[in-house]
Image (tube, rainbow, N blue to C red; front, side, top):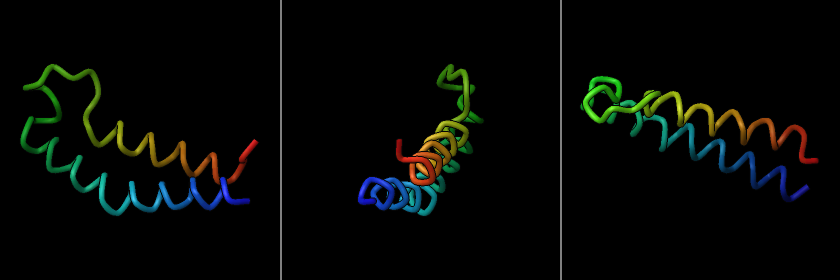
Length: 60
């Protein structure tokens, strides 16, 4: 039960804090093109949020 709450908390923090910061990074680096990234910062951030939501729903 606590693992689910922990994952849900991580998802909420990631969505509220990490994702807006990733959007700013993407604007500043033209979607990561300037820094030679294969995927934009926002995509990576949202993938982590979705992983945490999945872990909260299925803690096994």
